[in-house]
Image 1 (cartoon, rainbow, N blue to C red):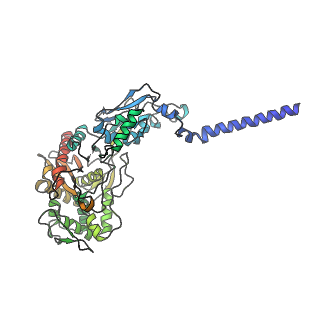
Image 2: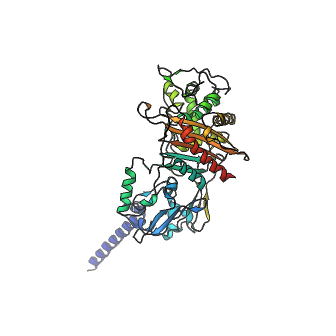
Image 3: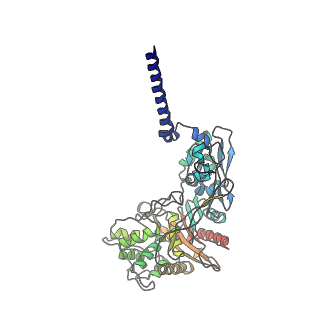
Length: 487
């Protein structure tokens, strides 16, 4: 009898040990995978059991929460949703999160360890701190000027503060109200189906996630490469590049949209947007030096975060000289986001020092205490200071007596560059209208804003400089709002 009891006791000990090992495996080894298992709703229920932290613009909340009374209790609300959708993104119980709602989710949902009262508090107690807030760099008057300027047309605007990198406006049009995606149920799925099925793609963030051929606006980058490499030493001297210009290795001639480009100087070519001169200078500068320059401006960088992901702007790393000529005037495979082209204007305005763009100024606890601040930092020395000064002068001339006259602002110094990007089969599509610019108050020692505008459905005669007619007035309104904010 004693032997049987002993064997039974050993069996129970083995079973107990197995139970303890299995419990340890579940709670320690498999804990992370179980937490993230789609069938496990505990984390989702906990996430929506408390209000989400808010996103702030100019110190005012542009988000909120409402009690749905459902298991996933608190649903996201948005103030002026379409205006700020390219900044906030959406937070949906059904479709997840995007943009700032996604990039700053740990703070907004209260899971960030920095929000806990003590180190490892959340891990030890399983508690979740109240959601913190995100204070953005966006300026409401600048954002609204960009939004109203586009007036529902397909396009985008990005505006940055050159000396700091703060993003002052980020607008994509047409837009949508992210609040219709909050919650669950048929209304939400119907809204998703409608929004994702619209040809105009209102949920596409054209400011940071869409790349376009930048057209003549890219000529500023080519000019910087030509000056920094020594290809051009005197901006007022004839370049010797003939009109018509035959693309290297082909019989194809490159047209100009303006007169006086035959062997024109670089200064004249920027002022009046001569295709032939900048295409020829790109080839003379050579692919290695062009690549060196475009990388300093941010092209071909797939790691850029603001903190939302920014699509990489493209400049091909391998190509023949005829394609290099076209790429040097923003055609062929050259593509850029509006934010990237705002960075180009910003580098010129800031003496060649390109600041890293950022959208979050600081993160806060639910009680308003600062958790972290975003520090200003340089992205790269995009060009030497003398080159930047020369480009500043050329861009000013383009506004005061060139293709960018519609961007002029009384009492301010404005430099700009138009762009007309052809696209479609055999370039038959309506050209995209571009304008990049910067503005400085007459009483200030540094530029207040650099801006890039692209209008997809520009209404312009193909012989016109459509960037000056369609995009420049929008840029002017944005710059005027930024200048008022800086006063």
